[in-house]
Image (cartoon, rainbow, N blue to C red; front, side):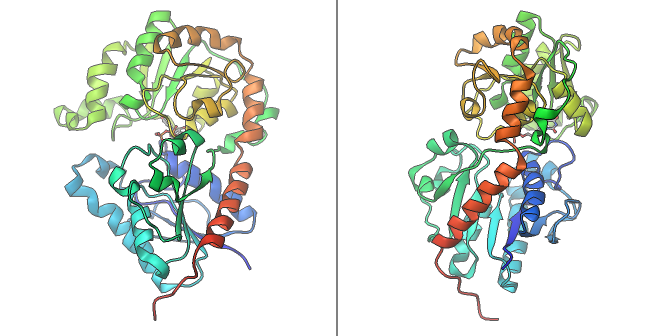
Length: 385
Ligand code: UDP
């Protein structure tokens, strides 16, 4: 019998995402591979998603990401409305063998609350697990909803009640890793790049300061809150400062952005993003938080770009110091490591990605977890029609 999985990507961005979008990128990478392995995929996303699937449904016509910047009491209904659509589907049909859920907190709570009326579910924890202690610290999902992390270090920091629901971790992957070891050598520029949301945890302020100190040109790529282009942020005026990432950028990062040695280029997507990353001497992660999964880290390796990073979160699991990158616990040393990164061999990075971070590797691991979750779950009791 073919396995049917309801893949719940959530209401925030289309799949694949138009540019920035860590979770949606994971879903867009995983689904084609699962389908190749014979899994039937029903995608719960937004109307603008274009990922080929067997069936799809949505509550919202397009991504609601921009609304995330509004106060909680104005936006808390969005993910609830999306989950309401998912629950209706689950009540209405009996062909879903498993839900693979990616919706922060609400997905987990809703599926757990369905109890035996719902199919077994795997909820992937894409975020920092010190968040939501009220939910994670006290979770009882009755054996039906299990969770997985995106790195061992992330799960190791999780509250005990959440860890008890865990079936392990699966590292993130990227389609760029397929045959990455056979890709031709790319010309390298002298610059480093920080690719990611501009936000305190990603440390763009520290990165910009250190790059200036050692004289390495630095490109900051990624959105500031809901603003994807410098012109949009400039046009937004003072109201934009309600957003904490906008305040962080304006107060801590922008003073280092001189448009020459340090540039903010906004969100880069598709080929432009790949070229920017592939041409860099280093992908720079001057982290101030425990990075849970690091999609951009595996993307950099796949494109033959060594990683220079704070040795925090998943970085030591993904990057081997001295071979595929340079890691340090000492923030101030990061600048010197940027200079040394050009001594590392891009081919080692690509080989590592082609071995460890391909979609096929990720999909096989998820299939294993789906099996584990289904075997451990008590039988489903469908609601009477
Ligand atoms: N990204 C992108 N363009 C940008 C900035 C980020 O395409 O300008 C992508 C990046 O390539 C990665 C994702 O957004 O696929 C960010 O995921 P990651 O796990 O690195 O960070 P987070 O989910 O914490 O933002």
